[in-house]
Image (cartoon, rainbow, N blue to C red; front, side, top):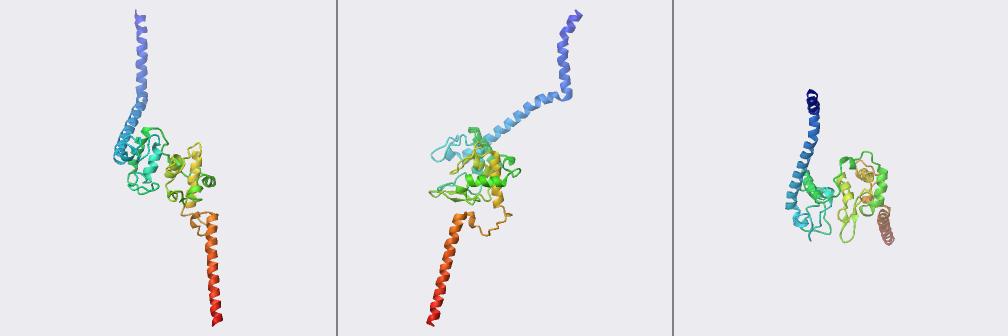
Length: 270
């Protein structure tokens, strides 16, 4: 009987010893802490989304619908992602002005970054889309400026000009200047393709390509950048700059010729 009792107690004793060992080494915390942290993160995210929904109801629902489904006054936001919200609201394009022109223009932002994050979290909860990039994605570390210039001239210069000075499009629309635009917003614009701009997902322009383009724009528009050519006329390019020089240069020569002829005629009469 003693041997049988000992065998029955043995499994229970092993469990007790294991639990004591876990408590003694902090193992119990290691088992319980991840669950608690995950729950805390989930609760925090839920609160952020809830606050974003409140802001959305006040500032955005009149155009985009109470659930972001869109209306006759604004497109659906389902699936546009947090990056689109961060760009549009962060640059002041949204909420749009009451009197809208051919396209929505950038203006002073009326929200704090915390409020923008809340709006972005709510819109992202409506459907998966591009996420807000991190500083590592659009920062200058490891960027190839020369490659960025090549990519920009191939994919962007047709609308934004060779150095990002902007340009006119059809029907009163325009490609805005990229000078002074935050690197994060340039990255988000390439991700989401706002308004007339096509989107450039990672399958078209990789994360590294986007970083290179941003580094190029920073290099050519930096106050420290030296332009050996002098006045660049907005960086319009050799054709338009050559036409400018031809018209005004030829005009100046004609004016000088007329002045010389007038002076000569006057001298002969006297």
